[in-house]
Amino acid sequence: MSSFKSKSVFPRRKPGVTPAPKGALSIYDPIYMGLDTRGRAVRVTLMYRNILIGGEPGAGKSVAQGNIVAHAALCSDVDLILIDGKIVELLPYAPVADEFVGNDMRKALRVLRDLQTDLDERYLHLARTGRKKIVPGDGFRAKLLCVDELAYFTVTVGTKDQQEEFRVLVRDIVARGRAAGIITVASTQRPSADIVPTSLRDLFGYRLAFRCATDSSSDIILGTGWSSQGHSAVDIEPEALGVGLLRAEGGFPRRLKTAFLNDRQHKQIVRRAVHLRRAA
Ligand SMILES: Nc1ncnc2c1ncn2[C@@H]1O[C@H](COP(=O)(O)OP(=O)(O)OP(=O)(O)O)[C@@H](O)[C@H]1O
Image (cartoon, rainbow, N blue to C red; front, top):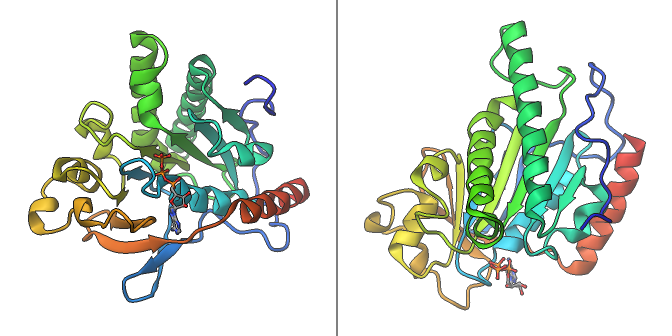
């Protein structure tokens, strides 16, 4: 995968807020995810948050993830770090990514280690300035880390040591990233305790469960106990592609149908994002 564009790693930008190019979005803006059962728009604000997306194969995870990445690509204030074990889901966004990693464990680990170093720098900056979170003007741009599919890197490829390092790095980035302006979007088609252990899943402020095979898989995404209260992604009809249960920190799961961008629309968004990012 070495032919993918790879800019110098995590450049530090000059302090001060550069005016956004005309028409650019912001990662501080709510991201449009789709419609709820009453036809109302569902939006999530991912800045200072993370989102875990799970569900059985073909249920709609990549489409949901694509909506988030599309929004982020059109923002002038966030860098994209895309890790895609399946390669094809996020590849269209490689031209606007600071880092794109395909099915390459060594590169994935290198990129995550760099991100962890960046995280350390951000916390040092917070400690020095006596503040609790990174804000615009700090000289640290927001970053969006998207990992598709967690299981690929934690159980399928690489050695046991590499898989463990991957798990530890992702957990640290999810745990400390919030305040530091590093957002994680992680997807899995295997919502099981070994892929998404409690120590990891509890760190996600947003959970999005598409159809799951069992109540326990659904609970792994949404949080323990929701299925026994009648909120289970098992109840989503198999033909209801793109229908999921979205739960925000402290809230009830809310049924939504995600917005669907086709390949042509993604291509158009990437072209626009390339233009916006050059102008930024
Ligand atoms: N919101 C939606 N509206 C219409 N169709 C959708 C929607 N979401 C998903 N689909 C349909 O379902 C198909 C599978 O969706 P998607 O690729 O997102 O599944 P997935 O959960 O990522 O699967 P896998 O785990 O195998 O990668 C899409 O190609 C599309 O045809």
